[in-house]
Image (cartoon, rainbow, N blue to C red; front, side):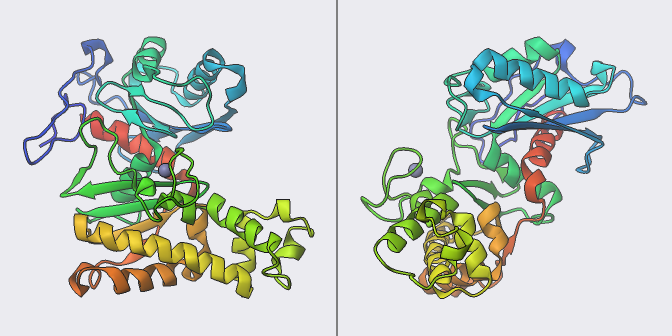
Length: 357
Ligand SMILES: [Zn+2]
């Protein structure tokens, strides 16, 4: 089982287990059990940094703060903003903060605390973020991939509560994922696992945000839906679609969100686009169900807010393509419960997982 000094979830198979310990002065104070312990969760976005303070093992923030990332002003500026937004939600006595989780929009090696790259934050390649922030704040800091942490948050406090095997997909401008298998978060050898959005959907298909072609993200994300809609409208399809009105007649204004809005009021052209995205998601899920055999699939992110217009084709494709009914019969596909706070709550949950009192 997890002990208070382990830095990541143990693996039942005896595989890689993080046992790196924070320096003694960075561990939670066990000498003062009556003192309130706080956890800080931070959502590091390309536009905004958001931080929340949680009192003990809870998911309702006691305090929240938000700051522009100012990503264009360089790495040092972003680090300063990050430190500021964290201090804004910390109690006066920093020693009461048991741990700080950071949800990063990119691949992070949780074993080293080094992030490889962060989407929309230039100059953040190979940054030893854990070390930098621990030196600045003097408290234990735990960076993790934002989609992985959203999965952790949904598992601990959201739609996945009570399950041991959870598959999580977040569908917004990109597609991220997280996998809880046998009650443990799947990390992989370098902590880079569960990038479900970058599984191959269409060989040599549209360009993906990662630079490769034909990944799920390139055909089913909000960005992909908007791009496909524009291409079809330019080709003369959807001439009577409500999308034109919503986009003020400008094809450049057609985004995934506009397509979603039109689909929700029954626009046929828009509904077809969302259905196609849903079918891609469902086909990929059919494969993932066979690999991970989850007891629940959770879909979050802006595109998932479309509800049944997206979920119906997802479920249809799962049923059509899964190896056997056994994989989906008792595995509901449900919307996420934490909404915009999934990253914040997940980052807080990571800190709670890492620092067990
Ligand atoms: Zn990709």
